[in-house]
Length: 119
Image (cartoon, rainbow, N blue to C red):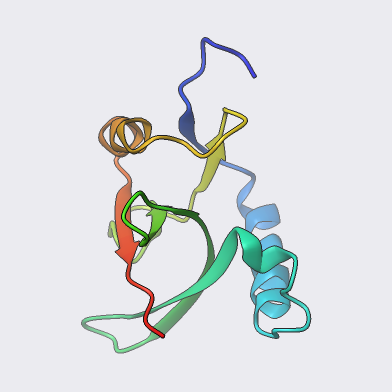
């Protein structure tokens, strides 16, 4: 991968393509059988709107954090009123470091979500 690119950056696919891909990914990740391979780095995030009560379901990428929690990066519309869902590109052939993720959050205006897994 190129050294002039940051380790993590936000990418903007065409809106129509993104909507279609999201629908397919939600369908694929909704079943344990279909999601076996995809679930390694993707999961479905369900967020309930504070004002509307509407449940938004979106596929998001995740990586293991140093403390065992899952790290999810997002710039989705539920987080920023005027925003829209964006993709995340990892430009290194390894799990990004915490410092690289923090730098991407500051630079790209992303949110970091830490998920604690319980048995």
